[in-house]
Length: 350
Ligand SMILES: Cc1ncc(COP(=O)(O)O)c(C=O)c1O
Image (cartoon, rainbow, N blue to C red):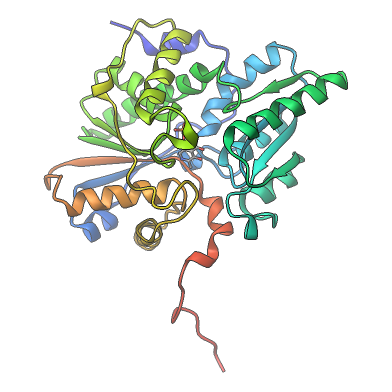
């Protein structure tokens, strides 16, 4: 019998996240959907201003960067990146300067400091905005910036996704989440049938590995925010397997996940990464009104839209239980406000 806790304890770790995150029922949402019992695992509440799934990952990644003598971190993603906002916060806490190369997905509106981008700036990140650029070209910019910093005598650590070397550590953080959930399910006497999550690689890879080691019976259903072979890269199943096996290697655990064990839907993305869908926007409003929980238009709103669609298709029995792992991201709401129609909801008192 593999002891996951012991394996995790062997990895250096910085306590950055507020853990455990709550596991809470959503009875009004379940009733409104006429569906299975739904529970939220609230990784939107991990702390590191305003939460999200990445904070768990920096607990394992930043010790490695610090051990390598890094005095700053270089990273890049979309301009409303939750990853970069949580990274900037974590680095502020440990005293590492942050340099970000941020890609504008909707150039007309996105260079205004708001949402995650506003917080990056408030927390002192040095930001370089790029437009009309593919991911391979953006990675080049990230490495050019790291080279410039090295030429100035600095010691930059290049973070994911440009540098995949430590992806096993990011992923191991979600085996830890699976373990945390395992204890909470036992405490609350729950035996879920499904776990739904917005996930592209590390989060689902870690959950799969953790759930397999722990012998969980629930099926993990990933809803991919990027679409088919995002940014010209490999398909999600390959990325998820790669991440899971890298985590197994970091944890020194001889566990293999087979391709048929990975369930990943890429048909809830709509027009593309970062572009909201009508179903995702409707899901955000329903969950907000029923439970006072905020989803986001890029990741969790689309994942919830998938769960709602699966309920509509009659895939669940009334006795089923679904855990929805909320990976955060709601700061993007403040950069997507114009997609919502509040007609008739705001009135003037004369
Ligand atoms: C809110 C949110 N959910 C899900 C994900 C997907 O996480 P992963 O890349 O680990 O699959 C991200 C990644 O940025 C995210 O910000």
